[in-house]
Length: 388
Length: 232
Image 1 (cartoon, helix red, strand yellow):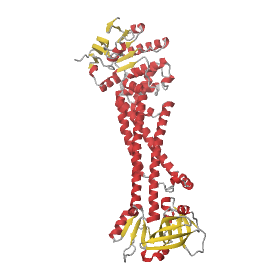
Image 2: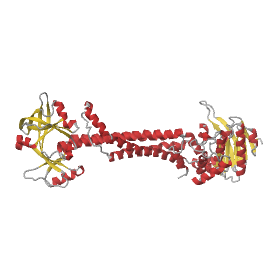
Image 3: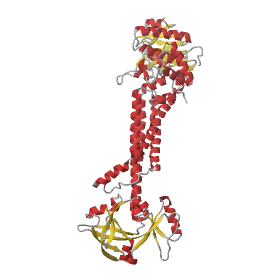
Image 4: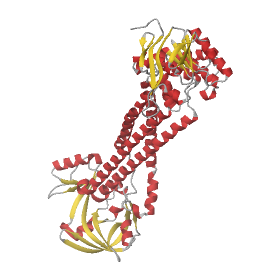
């Protein structure tokens, strides 16, 4: 490597340069950092929301795995089963004095709302009531839709297989998972209540919670042991597929934006060369090898890119970490435009997705900067005299 | 054919530029120019504005191609070299001074000279030492850390001379090196230039309008009607 490369690179980076050069480098660095931060933040947001929605469905609606016991089958034991709960489900029409709503009634035991499930929703319990009516827990979303509140009475018209049962109930508790699409169609009651109403006609199953990474292995083990089970993804194929597609589509868009950003970085290097034409010509006049000059510019631009990528990624992650309070605020405001978005979800850093975006940006900028710097060789030494 | 006894030899050089008018005839600038320069020899090329003095210097230095003829430098055919070989020749064996100092604005006086030394193959430490030494020779040892915008016109041109000579080239091409300086600074730069090329044994091809400046060279040529004639 020629000894001038580090000197030229450092100066192009603004180290030891005048204020105008430093300002130019700083401006470009900030610009790329902000673009990267937005890309990273958007990807984290989409993936976290998508996983948040998946979690709501898995923990509150169907469990990670639904197990159907055959005649004479005992409950399975497996080290990857974190919890197993019996549930009975019926579809129903829920009537308030003014309105009605189609809902999914889920009969559960008192142990159903374990710590992991309670992390997915908040529950507000009403004052102790002496009523003998069946107690149900509906969501605040549904309560708003039906214009009812804690302690109000509702009529349930339940259907399971061929049996239809009507029952008057009292709202014992309100829950809020933050995902209104789910909340608007799911209510809970005691398992004994639906069992008493439908007896053997009740569609019942066992919901298993496990760690996500163990899901497929657990399902395989259960199938080998003769159990019939479905994962929450199989149970909600359309939703799961939509979530995956959205995530992939957003990643694809982010990758395209990263490619454009990489191209922008090459424009930055091209502009740098355009601004420095006279200097480059002078270096050529002194006999500098164009490859040496090109290497110095490539290093300078890539150093700016790498620093910007690092700062942008960190800024994106930091902003993502600061998102929950903002989302909680938006959620509390109940903006109708946001009603079908999940606004309460844990932030998860999709390391693979972020790595893909960063790698694409880095690769595209490295190649495009390399190509754009080929023009360095075409700058004639004599042009420094013409620029004079 | 190698011409090892001469430093620079121009043989039957002809150069024209395209007409500025569409369909116009090319403008012939130089025609059948022959010139030989010995080592440590100083020659001046004079002539009216637009006569082709600078063009001849640029052809002689390999900065500009010619339509006909050959340029030999230290026994090598310069006019047929590829860009990379020309860069190598310029980096170690040629020095340049123009009317403008052409210093790199982002770099200090010392760094400007160091860069030329490093291009010429010196290590960073060697370049630093060489720069300090030659800048002291041109009387700028107290300006090593100054950027071009902190130097006067005369000082800039002295840095340019130091930069051109730091690699101890065989020849120095100087195109109106005092053209942009006031009388006092011009005289100082002129004196310095001749003192250094004589001390270091460097050949000088000087393009100038100034007859007094030209007369200090060993030979003086004039370009007139596209031809080169010796006038002194």
